[in-house]
Amino acid sequence: MTVAKIELIGVKKRFGKKQVLDGINLKIDKQSSTVIIGGSGTGKSVTIKCILGIITPDEGTILIDGVDVTHLRGAARDAVMRKFGMLFQGAALFDSLTVWENVAFGLIQGRGMNRNQAKDIAIQKLAKVGLGSDVAYLSPAELSGGMQKRVGLARAIAADPEIIFFDEPTTGLDPIMADVINDLIVSTVRDVGATALSITHDMVSSRKISDRIAMLYGGKIIWDGPTSQINQSGNDYVDQFIHGRAEGPIKMAVKA
Amino acid sequence: MNIVAGIGRAVLALLASLGRIADFTIRSVTSIVSPPIYGRLIAVQILRIGYFSLPVVGLTALSTGAVLALQIYLGGNRYGAEAIVPQIVVLGITRELGPVIAGLMVAGRVAAAIAAEIGTMKVTEQIDALTTLATNPIKYLVVPRLIAAVVSMPILTAIGDSIGVFGGYLVATQNLGFTGSIYLKNTVDFATRQDIMSGLIKASVFGFIVALMGCYHGFNSKGGAQGVGAATTSAVVSSCILILAADFALTALLFHTA
Ligand SMILES: Nc1ncnc2c1ncn2[C@@H]1O[C@H](COP(=O)(O)OP(=O)(O)O)[C@@H](O)[C@H]1O
Ligand SMILES: [Mg+2]
Image (cartoon, rainbow over all chains, first blue to last red; front, side, top):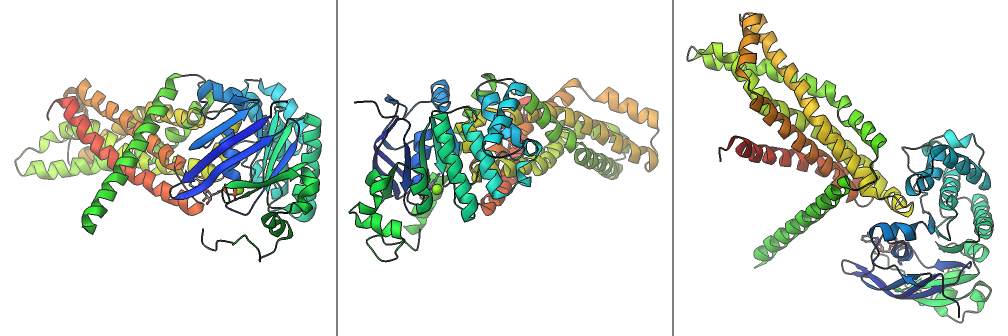
């Protein structure tokens, strides 16, 4: 039996009275591409932030390559961070820096690479996501949403991470740009040979970018299986979600 | 009963937020001494916090010195003591008004700007992004601002002090019939090193307060634009209150009067 790349065991997190994660169990194999689906506000982003160590879980264990990283701090945490790349929902580009400085940030600040070398790599990565070197000197504020996502993607893969997280990569994009991003995710994950974990509520995107899907509901993973079997999950919650029906076991909380 | 519960909750909330501020302060201060040190970022912040505050601090210092001279003259007049103007102006400015006015002006300008910038970074996940790029947000964002504020505030205040004394000199010589050379001689002879140094030490502490409050409220802003707006207001208000409180404490400490 091989060690899972990422493993969550009984991860719990509450904010105030709200138990957002209520015992998440999930295993992600090396070089696989997993998507977590689930409604808005079900805790998908919180799950990823727990794995990244941005949020510390109240209970449970998170293993990366079989090593417990749940409570790592300082230099040990930074070392784990270097395995990760993350594309944020709103791209989260640093608006005080140019596009290439954004892409090169992890190389320069996180790894101490010199600026010229980092800049060459940044321009290569921008080309990978279909952006020319003319874009490199612009400020993020001058880019459209789709271009910002691409820059965010270039930044996420700049340091050739072992694990890449995508938080709602296609949300807020038109269908064509969404598909461009999907293709980029598939190809970059394949090229880098990375393990990918994405979260989305876009079923078209999930089917395209994943080989496994897990559904988060009520603070737990209620179904987990190969993408090819999502239509035969035999789970009413999954069926309701993937077909986008208002009627079913999932009751939408109108008030958060 | 409800009133007691309400007061209890308010006290607990206050203690909790004091605890969070203390924790943030400790994490920030311990980060100052550990590498990496971002020299370029410190330089940029000195420019933004110190240099660009010069006009507003200079202008307020000038008018404060001028008004002070006028008021002391009018007050002193009642006892036939109007000759004391240069001495009281330099004392008031260097010990008290110079640092406090510079502190309050910088609180308005800089604490607000820092809170808005960091708050926006927080709500747009840029701070989380720093972490994922193996960069400590406290070291990258807070430490350069703290160092820059602590270093630039005394310089800013020293310049403000000179301009304030000059404001008093202008009014005294132009409107109140003082002789320029005598005014300056009285000023220089009267002011002690301790008067000036105590003001500059205060200025440094005020700089620390302003940068810390700007960063703290920025880091703790929630929600969207509204949250950032609230953080900005809190940063300015808490800086001003803490500056006035610290001023009293430092005066008592530096002059052993309490
Ligand atoms: N830092 C935080 N403090 C308080 N509540 C939070 C925080 N982060 C997330 N939450 C709450 O946790 C819940 C899940 O959020 P999130 O994981 O962002 O949802 P989504 O599944 O849409 O990504 C939401 O109700 C949100 O308000
Ligand atoms: Mg989310």
